[in-house]
Image (cartoon, rainbow, N blue to C red; front, side, top):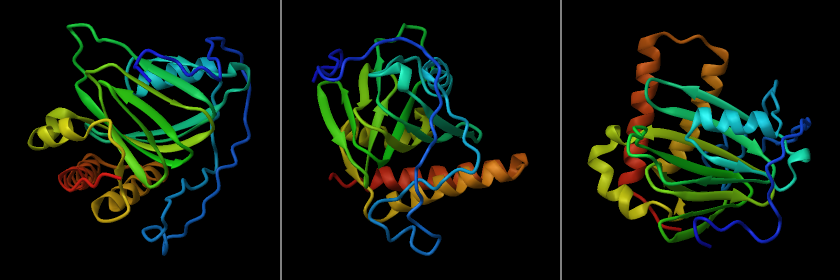
Length: 237
């Protein structure tokens, strides 16, 4: 599939009706087993703000990049996004039913030079960038470059963890990232699993605690260290 091709079935549209969804994502892990489970499930959120199609478009663009967002059934769409921003790195917990994202060619004054690292937790995610295509499943992850066009979609409901990190923080890993972007990579061992665990802990901790600047700085440095270790020891699925 090319970066500008939309899936033949289902059809995507751009209507924006408002609906609500009762989220039923189940937590299959406890603290003891989280690192041993083959699939790391997103834990339930006590209070979830579900978004309709119009609000979802705005939220996704505010959180990540400028994206063309479309929906298979916009009148039935709903999802939630929990996002925590540290200093420069953002961490998200994402749930949505069918949705399609297109990122076009950026203008010459575009300055948000970052990567997204996406970890499917439930559901398969399809991604294409610079002639590479993949389907990423739970237990895998992939890297998206902000400065190149891409296509990202899931045909069924999916839940994800996502990290947005500026490339300026990863200068020593740039060559590794360029080799491994848009490839399905494994988190079944080592730093990748710890990285997913750390994201979950950060989201839960920042949701329930007011952190000072030093605490946020420490959390970001710990997360960055795990990102660097994960990228330095990438394992292709």
